[in-house]
Image 1 (cartoon, helix red, strand yellow):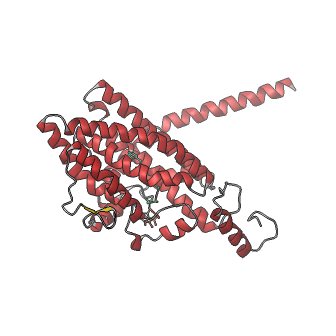
Image 2 (cartoon, helix red, strand yellow):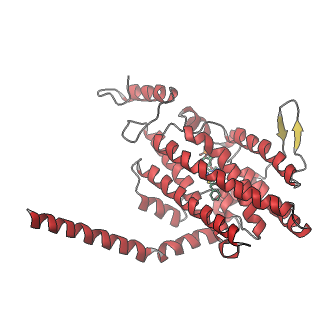
Length: 325
Ligand code: FAQ
């Protein structure tokens, strides 16, 4: 029984939908879907899109101050990629019947959420290494499973995004590794950046499982594949040996390999800080939104010019069609 078949009751459609996603089939924009499924996708994908857009600012801060042409070129490419990710993701949300203008309004008014991590400042060049290494690694671990999301347009966007995130992670790792193995001063900068970015990166995976209000339903619908804590543990397990390889110390005295669990144990997370940042009281929340608002305003003439050109072109085409008839 297909959820799209005519004449079904709401319960039958819901049942058919659960079986359909249970079979690993992809839901496409024109398929019937529960309203709560559509809303949850709009919520998650739009927050993800906003994160990619706001995520350009911490790194954009260092574009004019990159220490070499090679570093500048790589960083420019990375920041540009993030803009592209935002665009693919806004397109994916549009397939769920929400307009891009409405999404922009929500971001610009401060109503929409975006990832907590981008409300921290990038104080030194080593922070660019830390963002690429720590934040993109977290993004990859969180997002590779999203390539198997039950909603087709999101899953397909994630395939391309994850490929690009892998390049981002490598450029971050390379900066960190170079600095960690450089002069004493460079090593200290790398360690200081790790000290400041570690805990916010661990928090990126979201609240602990017992406080995650969406996880259970999202996993049942195969939007999410793993819980927040499972992904966080995977992250710690991957990152600790990389830090050791670079000769850096994770700023958590409780990090210890647990033979029985086959995982690293780690210390308590300061969830008060996470809640504060989510509530808009992080170090850069205000600055990020104001920068976005200014960018939107400064780009108004470009949007107006593009629209005027498109309208003129359409009018010319219509006129020549009439003339030909
Ligand atoms: N920050 O019930 P859950 C990147 C919210 S992109 C802010 O556990 P869920 C690329 C959550 O939305 C990084 N808010 O929610 C890049 C919900 O609020 P709501 C973004 C957070 O959806 C790299 C509430 O808390 N990645 O890094 C955060 O099941 C470098 C309850 O939470 C994605 O968006 C947070 N960290 O799980 C760019 C990936 N965590 O909606 C530039 C896709 C939770 O009820 C440079 N998203 N919240 O008002 C996901 O995987 C999920 O949505 C989670 C949250 C895991 C983020």
